[in-house]
Image 1: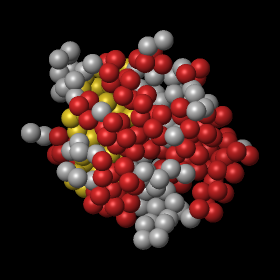
Image 2: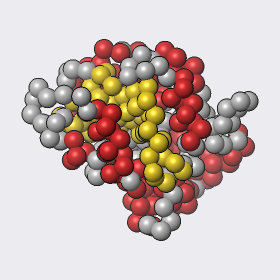
Image 3: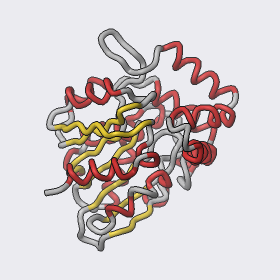
Length: 266
């Protein structure tokens, strides 16, 4: 099976030969999370959406417990997909954990990437000496234990917290539904891979120009994390947008679109 088929790739927008923009979703999500953002760039880009293995319409049989035990395995998936698509250097937009996956892939194969847009990135979710990731080790352990015990119940509880807009409960419901479309067994392992990773040292290796998009309030990736990524990533810009929650692609799409356009404009 081709990488395009494995990842349920959908391509829309500008005709062949136009620059490409690849949209990568975060943990527990799938490519549908970009439905408010993708159309805004289709006039100028060939817009590529895909599902990480285990999410959405991806090929579950392609999941490899060894390969996907680290974010490097997901970065390898991205490299293989971009090689197969052969669309030239792309603008790669990575949300949440896909921001880290994008950084790893760009460090490995910089010629495949024109620019990176990192939405709510976090190279480490656990607090460390002199570093605020947003969670203590005990909090992450509890989160993972709760997920292992009752994935669907955990999804219904955590999705509104991640979304961070209690006055718009439909947003939390949309994220909950996305969690429920993800294979639970793979999601549990992907959660451990995501929340226990420490990719801070990898920031120094990346040379691809990057935009760090940070929401002013985000319980998953606090403002301090966005600033850390910007400060440790060469040739990067920081856009602090007026949005609440970890999913501005759903809760504040216009703010995200504006930040992207300002960065990507000639």
